[in-house]
Length: 563
Picture 1 (cartoon, rainbow, N blue to C red):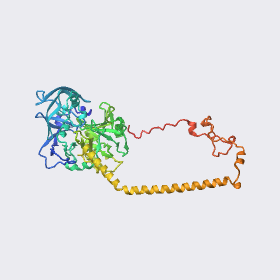
Picture 2: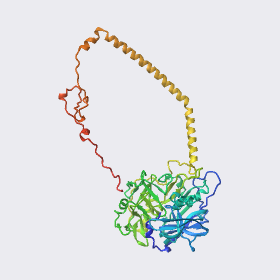
Picture 3: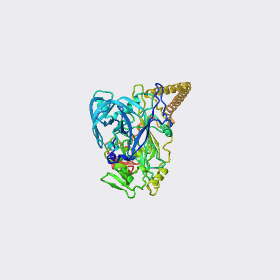
């Protein structure tokens, strides 16, 4: 998904791009058997690297081979299509035209052209016939950074190319990663990202991208909690539920959601967006109290003094993830003497409530897992795993080392380690839906076996209960019969009191009981605590809930200072 902020980078000189490496990984392809949960990259096996261009911490790009020709594409987890602008003749080498056309539009720019199929190779994987858009007309900010197009790393359900191909009766429109994973259903179906930040600090690291393998130093991420996408099944984007957020005051706040049926707010994790976007109230609460900060209506962003440390955290999956303060306030593009708030107020977000781009993802090592194939060839439910790279005291010290200023007093609502292993064991990541069914059946069989082993004890207890019930009934009947005989004897005895005829000869005095007059309105009934008090002396009591008639509506507490 293209970031609006990308438009601000349009005039950035290409010479500012910094070339680093994007790890090329080849996964062993076993013909059968379950895959390893999370294979780890062999740090020594670094012979084949793919160049990654990080342009001023704004855009992340890599080389891809299409029809045997190298192109530079932006890596974008917020979209699902592959498109490029051909070199030279305007036609991709080795491409087969499908006679289908489409125009992909973004918030900024567009890309229009023909849908073709062509061999594509990326990160050690080859798809012999990949459907993509061969662009003939376009206007997109990525061209200003030397990119020839975009490689979408999202779900096929979001792919415009696949939608057009399917509408025409075809079944070849799947995105690149889907085709890679479909080559071997037993192989891991995830990608891993770490986006570098170049600030000439000791904490600077290279960018990492891998298909199906983890970076060894972050292997612990495999033990952290799985964070389901929203919706959990068949999502269109890498969106997850957002539990809340924190400013520097350490108070956890919640963000109201506009997403239908979502139990809480929803956040999109998007490597294709340079900045982040959130509701205006959240952004104003973050930057509005910063000394010297002001909102620039022309830019649509907060202008913040570069030496002002602003702390911000997001709660996802029950854990708090801190942003590096260097990414909460960032240098203006093309002007390092002024800074802006990297979270931009937005009122037009659709399908999610918070749009988190590179400024947040640089603080994480992120796993995007697409789910595993079952026997029917369908992928399971996807999820993400997040590994925090930020130690708050260290990040604060480095901020002031680079920017100057005075360290901020930082409070936190939680001291829990966001990278702690999950307390709930995961279902093995290679378990398909069929495997899960088998596991459930085995569990049921064990439960039934356990119940059968306790059957004699249960029957014995039931028998004892039945015997006790029979004894109690017998005793009860005996008692009733004895009382009946005593009552008959007392009625026939002259000394037992009044005779039946004498009793019937007495006059009967009638006295009204409470509420007997059904025609009297409830509010007019006179009740007392003493049922013997004559009606003429009873005091009137009126309940407040009869007098008020309706329940008062309690004001709804907005709950948070956010939205």
